[in-house]
Amino acid sequence: MPEFKQSIVVSSAVQQALKAGLPVVALESTVLTHGLPYPQNLEIFQDLESILASEGVAAATIIVFEGRAHIGLDEPLLQKILPKLQEPGYFKKLGMRDLPLALALGQSGGTTVSATMKLAALAGIEVFATGGIGGVHRGWEQSLDISSDLRALATFPVTVVSAGCKAILDVAATVEYLETLAVPVLGWQTETFPLFYTAQSEFGIPRVDDAKDFAKLWKLHKLMDGKGLVVANPIPADAALDPEKIETKIACCLQTAQEKGVSGKALTPFLLDCLAQTTKGDSVKANLALLKNNARLAAKLAKAIAKKG
Ligand code: PSU
Ligand code: MN
Image 1 (cartoon, rainbow, N blue to C red):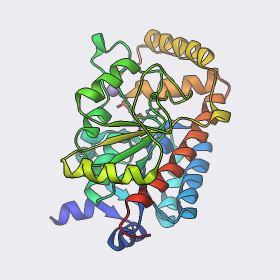
Image 2: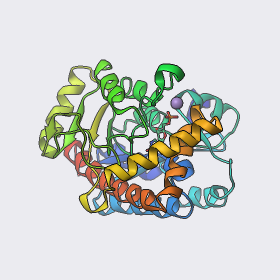
Image 3: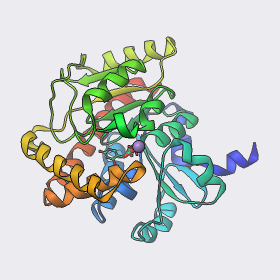
Image 4: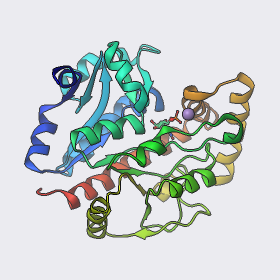
């Protein structure tokens, strides 16, 4: 399928690592295009890539640029992307269903967890580090707004390392829905589902402490035809925000979103931006800390399951 091959480009570094059975970790690009303000988005992208490199793991940042899905963002591509990052609206937010359209029409976009999982799975990458997964939105009873990240987790055989999900979502419904989809949710050295900005919650999850145990479990999960899996890695204690304070800000941002009629695709980026402003940047700092923490853990897990390295 020549068209398909032209539309999906695996960087040579990622190709080599995959061929050699060395550890590879996928990174999403919505964090670069929609999740964080400039220039923190660029800095974090570079930090995450260097964390993985220092662990001896190949970084596969996944992004769509001018009609091609790139798995691995190398220097020449970065130079092309950089000026566009500051152009508002240049990069669309691409979920998994948006990929064929974006590729066919020559568009550019950051890939959400669902689109990143889909492309990682196509390339044969089994570990993916992100900030927080999407989920069931508050008010889902009315809006039916449930992220296709959940569908992707039930579909693609990729381990997603995240700091849980943000309390901007209906967390109880998200945890419940993951159970319905039979997606395992493991707490990394913790017993409760973390809430992104805060380390703990009332939702109990099974605890895993050791990368070797994870590797065994992942192998069995795949043998039993399991698909996605969530490793929930709590934000480091020194970076966590005060649960009550952040909940107040979230409520306030949700109210503003409702008043302004923001919904659908635009909702998550709107809420992230609103929180960044109302916490005077504290939410961004927390986001950066947990992204790095997740990249470190993803590197450890990717090494534990790699054939070599
Ligand atoms: N949650 C966050 N930060 C994010 C996202 C979610 O705390 O940046 C992004 C991720 O890319 C996620 C996507 O996959 O938003 C989910 O969007 P939606 O709810 O529209 O599916
Ligand atoms: Mn949605």
